[in-house]
Image (cartoon, rainbow, N blue to C red):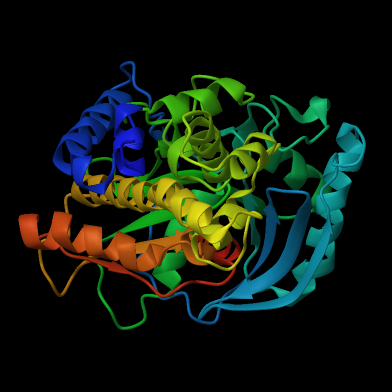
Length: 407
């Protein structure tokens, strides 16, 4: 019987040595160019109408709202980064459908609670749902995700609606990836960076960068990149998702999908006879496996009720899922560092601010170390382009939203 690695390769799964980094970077560059020029592209390349500032923001305090899941948070955020009076509240529309007034009043109440403690008139709102940004930092909601039930809000300019109801002088609305990029500015201190990138790798993924020609942040919606060759296992996961054919890169590197890919691989291998009959029965009977559980299994921290020999084989099949994800994440980042047009000087690198549980909490491999190893080879050694991944910024989206309000 062929090795697990040969089985993966025969099914179109690219192992670490088989991934053509340079080709993918070139494909990323072509998609970025097409998206910026308004031609058909898998990358939306949305203008964010905000850019990092060189201004000194020390001592400023802004009210910040962070909405993007089952809960939202409100706080007062200051620079250097400090978060005060933070409270979590249920996101309106999670448990039941809400109307327009109830939806906005939930956020307006938080603004009124926090404004007495701020010295910046504008409110920062990290709004992590599909929305079209405007030059005045408003955002028109295109659709809800994450099972939010508030249909009256779709199509509205959420910043303007909240401003009208809350008494705030202005609202700066940014998505979480743009806010994560801006958080790098708050961490700059005495350092000088030539440009900035925000990268999310958690349940989903996205990248934002500062375009040197537009002189503003561009939200690439990079999880939709569709030029990475898919394996039979990726195709199976994609077809079972709620948006087949979309977010192809996201489905190869993000936490919502890595467990599902591993499950498809293990079931296919079981059918092909790689495991004992008992182990094959266990694997074929699995309804699914979470990314967290699969990661812990690969790290030897969890078992799947398999005997040692079969567990070892199963790890050979599934560890490449995480290795591939790290390489593709690094390729994605490298493409945007290059697109930034900066980072040539070692003393003025491109700053990369990263947020997300898949990047920081994966146990199967040392994900940050694997990404850095790839970036060092792709950027520094081969291109003499320099970057720096800034230390993890806790609550990066909130800090970045505060920066958006301050500038």
